[in-house]
Length: 274
Image 1 (cartoon, rainbow, N blue to C red):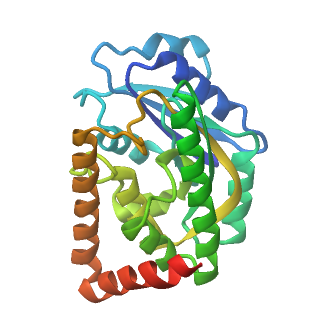
Image 2 (tube, rainbow, N blue to C red):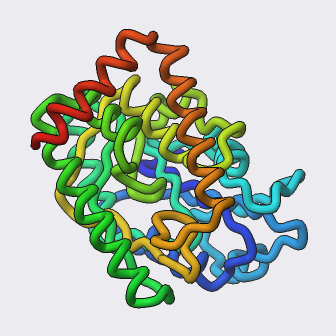
């Protein structure tokens, strides 16, 4: 069916948060949605709870080759099935805020040259108070940087921030036009950590971005947190550094050294001044 939003949710053994995520999508008003649940667990842990919802807007699919929780590969199974004008890659433990899809649809209709919209992020969850406060400060600063970047246009300032500073958003916080996902070819399965940052860099560079100064999602933070942890493990730090280097190398190869190093200089001087 043709609809406004196609929501792709990769899931791996988190049936209860998944139901909360799906419910937040189905509650969205003044838009039409379809939801693709891509179950990456070998035993199909999400099948029964999703079938019990008995909602024709939901399509349940089991990954025939489970990855053990590699979201880029699982997301790439879902978006080619989408019929919606806009695609939302929602993590299975995040929650879409009330009225968000209607606000995104309005923004994209009013800005036809822009391919991606993203908003603020509100952390919540079972992490320690120290971790939650760390996440809140991180995303408040990310929103401030995103708002400042708007004055420089829809592309390069956002791209520079993502490449050479801290990421402005997580995967669930953005919605993208379906044709833009096709244009960039979805997610890079070679990047294990920071695959969503790489996806957003390519989408912003090719299709342009718009920051909405409203909360897009409630972002669940567990304990320990994989991202932004103030006490990261050596392995987490290694994977993040490797992902960032892959993202930067891919960008430099595609768009050239001149643009790459010019963006680095712009980000570390002009953007930081704002």
